Image (cartoon, rainbow, N blue to C red):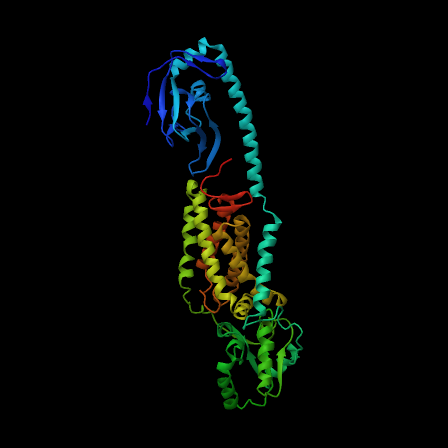
Length: 479
């Protein structure tokens, strides 16, 4: 709120004189004198107090332009150009201003060449300052978009160190490379020799995979004994052998998974149960499907197991896809902040469920059939800790652009695995939370596509509550 006073002659800075024009107004601290975008009406001279000139975007990013004190003036740009106010001016403390209308301003310029030259010089000075400020802002934005390799080394290295150290003290410890340093104690049998025994019904074929895979396709006459449930199902397996009179026949174990880990582990366990002859089917992991007569039927999806709160939160990225269709919302830093919280919670929840039991997660990785044998355990150890570290960094606002790209990369890898499982008909769960998970379907792909786009939006527009190289950014960013 302003207070009008009688006009009087004024001796202005640098010997410039304004006589019998304008009126004095008092501006309380914190009040706006002019607002960005308002039509031009008056020119102001600061008699006392301090004022701040700034610009502010629709999404709340404030650019501080300058500070004014006694003898300074403002409002001439809009009056000269006839355009709306280009900036806002607010009082930092109680101020006294001389308010001059547009008609009075035009009259003063016509009869005061010295003042006109001074304003032209000031406008030129501000133009040069604006060019420099624009250049600094472009450089600043370019540097923000330049993600240092250190950001990635920090998160990847921290995840790897935590994974290795925790694995040393974990009761469910697994070797870094499955079977590394172990000698194979089970002999392999060639496919042609095994086929001959199958035709003569002189051997018992044992399928080491989960029941879903066995039911989908298996060697005709094979018995299913999943490696994961050996202790539970072995008594029934033994009973079948006794009922069929096959106790003395050789056992040939096959599994068909890429790493072959189920085959050798099951064969080793059968040897420990004092079965006389136990072999592992040699050759390519899926060669038996073309060589042996098989029984098959349409794959039945595994039963869905609820994921709890993380499973419900996973639906939020699907709604995020709709928000991207609204341009102002799409570019909102507040949406990026919400995306950081959602992705952070999802990845932290999923990570904590897998960290304690890396062996179970390793078997889930095996089922996708995309990871080479030597990398399964390393991936099972590293990935949950990478999810945890990136999730924490997103929530805390630390290196969020790098964290978003890493999470986006993890989502992309997962989408590839899901699509491959769908196209090849793998009857598996997603493996998101250890043994618990949703069946692989296109809804799962959609959820992860939403998370991938959410990571991209964070990368492009995140600037709210961020710990950047220049310091902590709250709501406003001053330049």
